[in-house]
Image (cartoon, rainbow, N blue to C red):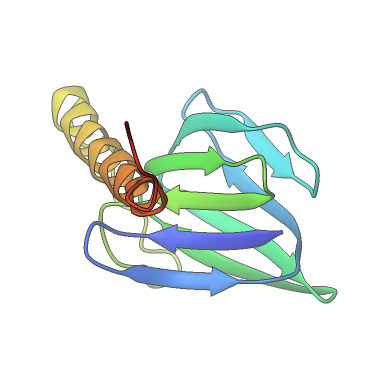
Length: 127
């Protein structure tokens, strides 16, 4: 699988040949993602993200964000900010601010996807 972590301004991580990803979803469920996982769109909470490449496990502390698993075995996490130092998880923000931040992150991500999809459509001729 390909694991990509994006912020609104840059790509923080791109890891290829990932054999497993573990994230914490907003409904307090831990989710294990393996090659062949069904497409999914879900909200994540501020928690460690664990992933495995070549038998070696890696861990990153991430803010809450949006998880998007694509059919082509891409796992994309949209997060509002930078990676944080180990153990630097902040207290949850008020629900309205949290929702607004996640909505803006998702809209920016979807806008980026529509631009990528639009690149291939520009080559088509319409009559």
